[in-house]
Structure formats: C-alpha cells, structure tokens
Length: 367
Image (spheres, helix red, strand yellow):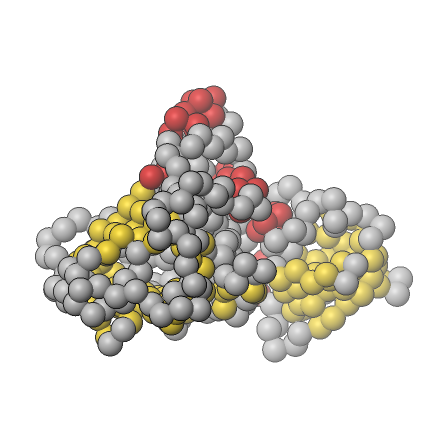
C-alpha cells in the first residue's frame, strides 16, 4: 500500500484512522466465528491469539473511549507525570520543524505500532509473531521464558521475551533505543524504558491488551494503558511500502527528514519564564473572556483575552499539539469567547499558563 504523508505527519496519521479496514476475501474457511464462543487453544493448551485484530486508534495515550466496533482504550490521565527531561521531549516534539521518524519510514516501536492499520498474529507453542501492516513491520517473540539477550545493540522494538502466567501472555521488553513515541501525538520514552505487555483472550472475539511502562528518565512513576482488540477474520494485510510513497516528499522537503535526536534536557520551546515551574500550580484559576489577539504559529501559542474590561496574557501549548487535539487556528480566533483554566505567573502580572481551553462547550487539554 502506498501512503503519501504530508509534512504534518500527525494529521496524515489521523486521516488514516477514519478509514475502516478493507474487508478482503476470507483468510481461510474459518473466517466466520462466534465472537462470544470459547477461545481456541494451541496443542500445549495455551490460548491461541492467531488472527487479524482490529485495534482502537490511540493517537494520544491519555484518551479513554469505546468505539462502536467494541474496541476501546483506557488511557493514563493527563497530565502525564513527566520528569524535567520528559517534559522537554514532550514540548520539543514538532514533526513539521524537526521531522518524525514515522514520516522517514523508520520502525514505529512497540506501542505506536498498535495504531492504526491492521495487525495479524501468528502463533505456535514456542513463539508469537506480530505482523503489522504499517511499513510491513513484524516482531517475532519467543514465549518460553528465555532470558534477555546479552550484548545486543539497542533497537526500536528492544529485546522482547515472552512467558505465560496461566492463560495470560506476558512480554517483557528492555534494551530500547528510546527514539520511538508511545503515540502519534508524540508522548516520549527513553533508552531507560522497561515495557511490560500482557495479552489475554477472554473469548473468541476479543483480546485484552495492557501495557505498563517504567521509565525513570521520562516519567516520575510507571504509566499504563489498557485496550480491547476485536477479532476480524475477514480482514487481510496489504503490502505497505512506506519509502515508495514518501521518497519524493522527503527529497523535496515536503516531509522534513528525521535524524537521530540528541539526548538533551533543554526545553527548546518554552524559555524558563514560560515553563510550568514559573507558574503557581497551587492556585488554579478560571477565566472567561473574549480573544483579542492570538499568536498560533510560534514555538508555542499565546493569546490575549479580555475579561470584564481587563486584558490577560495566556500562554498556550505548542500549535502542533493543539492541532492534533482539534484546537485549530480556525477555532481560536479574535472575537471568540473562551473559558481558560490555568495557573498565574509567579513573575508577570495578568499572565497565565493555560491547562485547558473551552470553546463552544468543547474542552481541550493543553498539557
């Protein structure tokens, strides 16, 4: 499958998810299945996860939702517990300026690979293989409880070893290179990450997937995510030649080429007076007023709102993050009435750092 990505990789990925998987000819004579029936098992008695699984597109791991097809996501609440280094990586993520590894056809890494295109699982008594349509990627994991490999170089998917806990498959992942993101919106991880994924099939038609990430360089505590995948035996994988579709755009600069980032704790978006530590987070305030000025195309957004004849300066999120969450320049414009939740500056009078913006009854988290 050829996919032509725009320079804003995030928007392209969101477009892909609104298109449902294309049903193909049945993969086998067993394509029809009782979704509430008993789970198939391998010859060793363990659950067999083989088949095509529709996943919930989770472009932002802080979201919680259930789709009409039965797929669902239970996200980690915002704000994520970033360390100073993690906050800098989160703020610095800007695909139009710096490129995104997905747009340069690099491996997606474990968690981001679970969205949005189809995924096939093949399994036997000793191994499980995850076949991702995205970029025709795959991961082949031993499930016999073998120890992690020694002396291997860090990789995008890391070193993955599986073991069984009753009917639950546990996959333990270490030795990650730290370049991949947890979701399309860009939530980061580092080379110190330790990922634990569990898979459980309660019935024929559903697969429960949970992951826990321990990454002390990026997060002050472990973060977790739970999803439900739905068995779709009438869907088949297509060839996905990423570079075939993106080569021209990379050469012309329509897509910014991605290069290996430097490991720096420096926040390249917010100067120190605009970072969270410069605001009193013990004094959350709510302001409702009219936008008088808006700056949406800098490293971070700003606006001036008039509240009862008094003007306040409001510092917003990076535009790429607001765009992803639907708070676009067409929504935030002069003359629009908004409600802002945020923190007052410790240094500048009538300045706030917004945590949420509500427009026309819709609230968007900026953190």
